[in-house]
Image 1 (cartoon, helix red, strand yellow):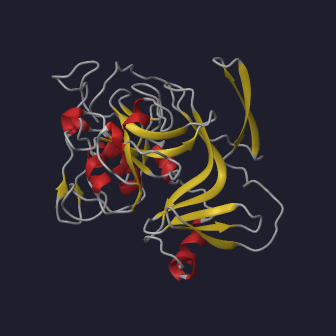
Image 2 (cartoon, rainbow, N blue to C red):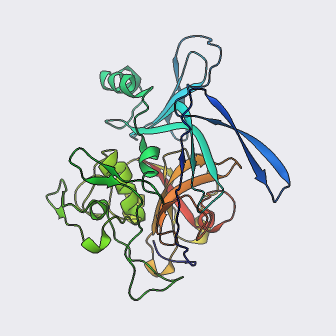
Image 3 (cartoon, rainbow, N blue to C red):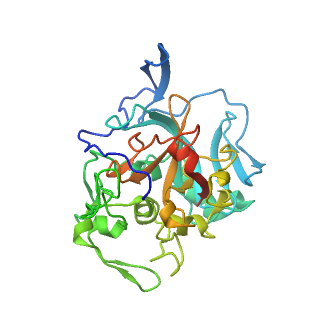
Length: 356
């Protein structure tokens, strides 16, 4: 990411993935809104709770919706259980509520019952009747195994290190990139081009035969697109390209991802100027990739990517991304609030969105 920069404060302390371990479903969170002089009461679910219970009215049923074309599964209680979009592997499943927060850099908290998982193949109308989907859904419908959102928050400030079975560190507090010797506070302080294999510190063989070689200087670092590739690719197993042009899968850069034919264009890219800001964001759903134009120096290229997380307790649509100002993945306010609605820095520079 490059472009408009603000001074970066080194963050300490733990950015919390608020998963409250109790057996009941409902907890109550009070948050004072000093600017309005009122107190809001928010219902926040817990990881070990159960889904909201409502009276059953019949059998599970499927329906079709448009813009974009998608299939919706409702449970016997009439509540949405799953949403699958034609041409996309992303599935939005309903599960126990979780609260995502990053108190070191924002007061925003996102409480959501959405769990984002990747299906083994893109969805198509009628796929609910196919064996591959029935098998996949039976395994994932009520799973509490880490999903895409859980993966993402394993790299924010203060996140503890996690290791795989081989003892390799695969998650933990990530940097954006190494210090730029020619940069300064407020202007390209950190270098970009830190991919997932740089964070891991291992050579990675891509399907086109190219081998990604980590740079020691970029260890434990993820730039904005590298963060998405770590979460969706290395962790969630979406195919990865070695560059923007070679191989198949998720491209290397934000611009490559935005212009790729992979997935479904939810907010189509019409241009990179201010006039090309989408007129509505109503079609966005959690898990979508959002693309921004931040830096005039990059010409026609889009230069930042994030992922839609959901609505915070104040009703703003929040995204998570890796940024220079915070030196890593964040939903924070440093360098611009992480909101897609309104007229903040990122809301005004949003240009397109895609559902993988």
